[in-house]
Image 1 (cartoon, rainbow, N blue to C red):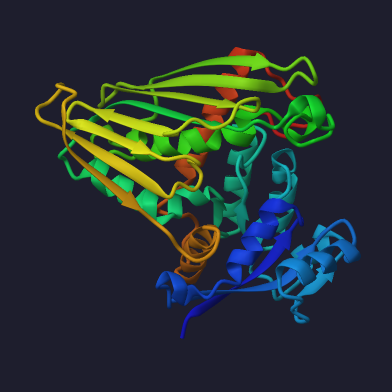
Image 2 (spheres, rainbow, N blue to C red):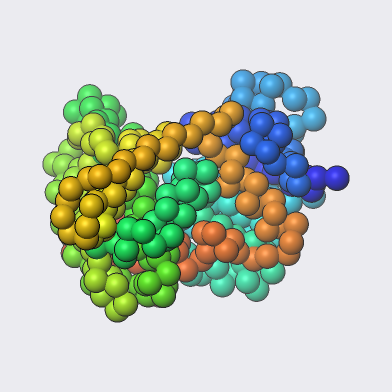
Length: 367
């Protein structure tokens, strides 16, 4: 019998819609038979909104309860795990309430407004003996596992330089300043909204590489260009040096005023390259180039690998949560707490260097 995880859903926005639709995809379509998922309740700002969400994205399942508050989802005794899809400046409060109610948590990225908030949540989760994971869905997709295998099998050597970008033209001159991407109260801007995706590839290719021995970056250099509309960052770039064990550098960028570049990720080695197609949050293919000799740049062999699956790609992270809860784990071995902390500490430092401060009252924990 498959282990079935009962979910409560917090918020009814786009990302929650995508997640719930994936929970309803038959696990057999992705060769999964050990875990399954059931949506128990949905919380929104009104019962009507929650019910509309259920009718539209959960097939109108009459067994799913619609609540006009998040607190009612947290109090639902049948809910074992909570998915939090609210704006990231609300994550700390939402996740804290879920943990205090005894629920396991899958929280969208960026997990919190700053690293101190995240560390406070992780401390609470440990005290409560509850599972907590950042919802960096890209890490659990089959293509990411294959990139990691190719990168680490040894033929390319150690990584030297990684370029990764996620950009999207949000037409910021013609959207409301209350839009999530422009509103500083919601942590708007490129870094916190789009930045986790360039970072996930830096983590996979550099931080997770065996030669790095899980060493954090030895330096972080950031640059922020703000929009005069609301003061959030419209384009941000940051460079991470990994020099404790590797001699490698990640050059990362994000913008809300440009379309995505393609390839979105290039990982360069002395023996070849890996180019990952856009969009980097859900790439469908990557190409590996092998040189005739180290450092020559002459490609003598090239392989392109393509991937497809039923659903949007969010179900893979849900499967990971179910397995961890089933096995009594408090964190994922694939996307552990150390990686979420790394992301938030990098973002804190880039914001500090770029003088991007969130409005007073938004950040709840500072030390």
